[in-house]
Amino acid sequence: MKKQDYPKEFVTHPSVFAVENEYQIFVPVRSELLMWIEIGKESFYDHSNGVLRSDTPLHKMCVPMELLDTAKEYTVCYRKVIKRKAYFTETKDIVKVTYKFNPIEKGKAINIYHIADSHSRVKAAVDAALANEKKIDLLILNGDVAEDSSTIERIIGIYEISGNITKGQIPCVYSRGNHDMRGICSDRLAEFAPNRYGRTYYTFRLGDLWGMVLDCGEDKNDDQEEYGNTICCHAFRLEETRFIKETIAKGEFLDNTIKYRMVVCHIPFTRINYNGEGKFNIESELYSEWCRIIGEGVKPDLYLCGHVHVCTVVMPGDPMDNRGQTCPVIVGTRPCTFDEKEGFTGTALILDNDKITVKFTDNVGNEEEIKIK
Image 1 (cartoon, rainbow, N blue to C red):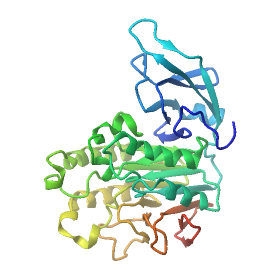
Image 2 (tube, one colour; image 1 turned 90 degrees about the vertical axis):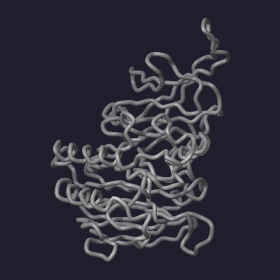
Image 3 (cartoon, rainbow, N blue to C red; image 1 turned 135 degrees about the vertical axis):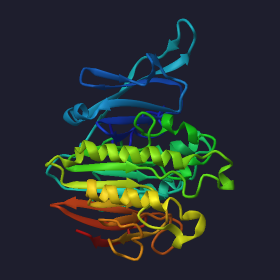
Image 4 (tube, rainbow, N blue to C red; image 1 turned 180 degrees about the vertical axis):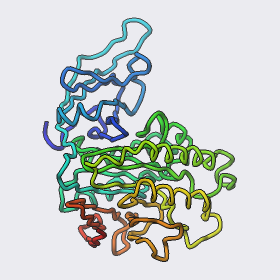
């Protein structure tokens, strides 16, 4: 299949997201389809307890990470539904589209591109990633990629970014942002976005890289009037704290083949946001605990964040280190270019020979390089 080609029934190419020990493959579609993935002789269906789903704008298939990494290709199979009925549903013939897949291999440099806070700027975010001179091995979408979750179409915009950048051929990682919690469809993100058993926090392992995805939820207290009594993020964060402690106790990040440990979280909880402005300065005790137990237990090499619409690297002991971070915090995205015109700036990360290089790059080719390790 040609690089830019995808079936007319698709909105864009598939996107392959890493969640713990599996890949979750998402395919946004324009018409009613039945869909599954074939890898070798095995099939993985988009189904609900044995019933193939068709009345959906977004198909999701989960496949074992090791299987796809070994096969290095997968086939998207689908049937167009003519009329779904209680008996004798009418469908068209099977169509198959095969995608090559490039897993992250151990012992090799990893080129990462990080996007957050694109706020539905699809073209600018895609252009920023593709303007990067390095071939991308991993795409990280770190919250507020869509402006909100007010419509399913807004959520689908996330996959227009990932599909157009990756062409279905490289892995992605997804982290939820606070704007993703806003809108009538926000409580359906477990259906429409990567997660683990409905949880928006989890770990992943890709080559020499181990990562923990965290989710701070909203950026203000639950009783804020703008939330209209629809938020319970404090309880959510307490549940997440148990997950962090359980992950540390399991020690999966201690594998001696792991070279890099990363924490991905939309909100940089290591600092007080917005210069300590009252309503944004929340959960100081809990976030300080997160910094402490992650720093002592995981010993990450970096945090990767967005949210505050700036591009900066905060080192331990810097003025913005308010809660005792133990490693650099890369806050790497803003919905504008370096010269403040309409556009988008993201972050290119190079992990190579135990060194980490950060480049802030925008959609018109400007870049700024910082070496942090």
